[in-house]
Image 1 (cartoon, rainbow, N blue to C red):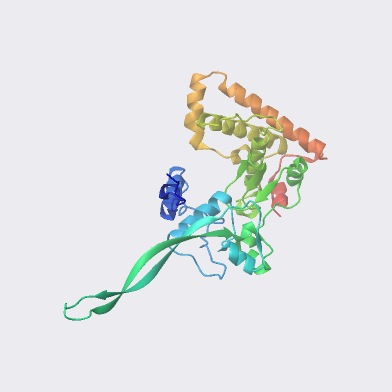
Image 2 (image 1 turned 90 degrees about the vertical axis):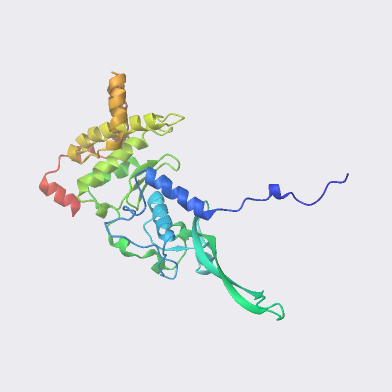
Length: 324
């Protein structure tokens, strides 16, 4: 019996459920304690996502785009489709991924209704609501657009710190430090540190102590101290955070940073206490790893041309000079 050339419906591509996708990402954000309506913006003032025309997004698209801005640390509120970017003279950078949003529309159809069996019937127009999806990119993912697209209120906040002994120290290490969004983290994939803008911190100490914390994480990469396990579960993550906490305090002491500005990751406290009770050498291993990380950074800074003799504890006058 000859095979049919007709493709089986069972092998057809499943229809994308954009409503489920957005719902799932909201669930993930809520479980992580970072719902997009909480504080997905920088500087304390909410900024609604905007279309390329400057028109505001509404409804669920606001939450979906806020969530993506938080995850990717985008600051620019403007979004557009791939084609819109091309039409405006821009180009989405290679490797960038889009964000799915929704569009509610109405379709109209004329049907014939039999009013009386002796009549030919009456034409009635019906309306049906439907849900469509399309993909957009943030302006931060696009090159070549007109300057106006890259200018927004957040740009007025100082992005990087002014020249000082502290900024010189971190610059000499040579890490890829990117600024934007309201979260600080080290991303092994890509090997870079993401920092909020310098001007978003209450004072310079907060900025530099956070930067110290992320630099401790940086040392864990395979090309440096090779500290990260192949499979990183919750316990391994908590241990790495403890190393970063201790290491940031050690590095802060070298740099003259006040220890009360080191971040307190209370979410890991339970894991730390459990491990400390079950392993008397847990804190010893964390402290040893932290010291190695601190030493690695100090050595890297010296190799990068940094003169450690210019470091000294900052008094109020020194703090003001860094902030100036």
